[in-house]
Length: 288
Image (tube, rainbow, N blue to C red; front, side):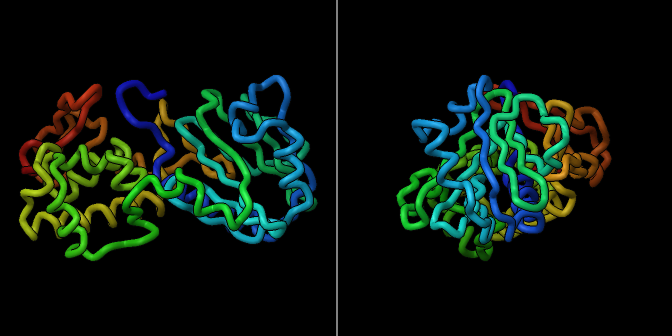
């Protein structure tokens, strides 16, 4: 894992993957599924007791639609099953040809009758994949583990302000709290706070109405821009989209890992400060 900090894929990367899957596999029928032996793949599908049980739930079904709930991908199948997938810190999902080389640490193969296959790999085996009947989705606790998903259910800034008044955390702590806001991570938290012009240690229940308005606008703009750029790919966070292409948002980063460089707003030097077991990046001059 990324020591002392969160890792991608985060919310923008999962949204990118969901949109790719909508274009590439909806309407495809699953020919067969392989849970590869000798790869510890059973740790990834740990909710299923046997390979065959998992494979039989998917084989022969058509993908009707793909949804995203938080950082989970949901594949709704025409046989009444829903395949749920969380990539974790190092999971990778690729669409490849059936004759191509498999990525390292490939645990699952989902082959289609037409249109290649999906390969799922995860060197850390921290991802999770399982299938449940459609009518049992509401019972999956992991899908109800957060309060807000800004990409899926945008709020007005007034609604956001009311919620913040009841919180005791500082701003960065709140942005990284996955039980509150889904899937930001340290990259996007630092970028949002710079865009809003707010320090990471500001108490979130002490913000002015103007502060809240700037913060919520920064949340929405940062996430939408990151999705448009197909996510963030860094050396130690090797996100790839469904086709294996790197994201491009890293070239837009204003403060994250830019210690000593000039702020793009006021030209002061970006600073790096200790935060918890990791670090946060900011412009001390124009973030207050």
